[in-house]
Image (cartoon, rainbow, N blue to C red; front, side):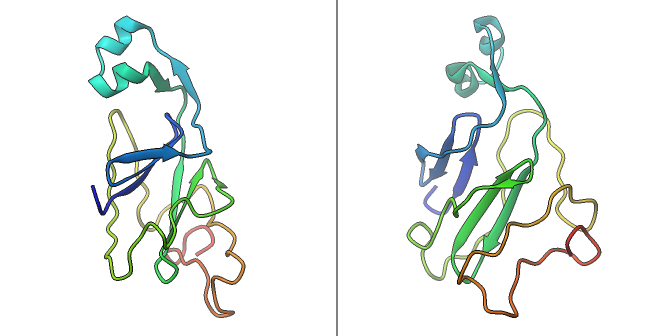
Length: 139
């Protein structure tokens, strides 16, 4: 939708406002045969690809800079996937997830597997940094 921003490493796409654009990250996938594909949703059947291993997707949000950063298995993209040109001033951001299959979520205190991205040059003042829940990896 107009206020949705997402990444899809299975198809190397970033999504916003119902439109897919190229994203330079690919998640490990395998081709699935047509019989398997027909048993899946229409969207997956059209792609004939499925994740071949578990992955960890990380999200870091720079609210002041209006930037969204994503990682795959702890490897952060070199630049924000979405920036101020994509996220209007004054828009409230809420976390959401859409998927088909199984997933596990770590959304609060617990055992994060990976740390936050390095601070972007010039993004934060000397007293600002990425913040995580106290008592967690890097927090």
